[in-house]
Image (cartoon, rainbow, N blue to C red; front, side, top):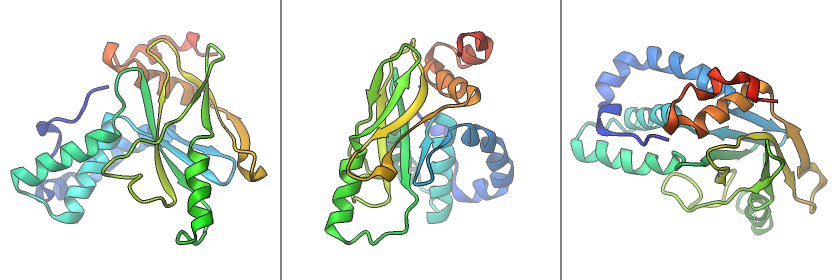
Length: 203
């Protein structure tokens, strides 16, 4: 998947002029990649356009405009964009809990290693939680996960086999639209419209 380049970002003044248009354009892309697992976990799958939107929002909030600051934002947010054959998502815990309690922090760290995708060939692929500058530096309600799927396969289910708390031991089948969206992301380097042109491949 393509990483962000300098032409993808703009200073906060120009972004404010284009914010409404850019936000509208990315909403549908984000909605298809917004996946719930029960009522406790939310997974936001990332791609180039979504991460670009994150980066521009960060630039606007911090009112950045120097070349050095803009390049730094590219470096930070490119960590969220999957490499070839990968998917990356931000896992959000929807519970209202006390994040300072050691036991709760350990729960979320442990939970990360129990999240998996079932691919269209039946394989189960577990997520990894890489250290990044954006998330995962401080255990809280948000974790970045990456899954290696390969170029020729895509997820059809998402689940958790965390057995210490039954509320987080569940599995969901992705909708056909969600499967197509993630398949498109996985094949983006070989032509972003692959999934749309081959809808019959999605079961």
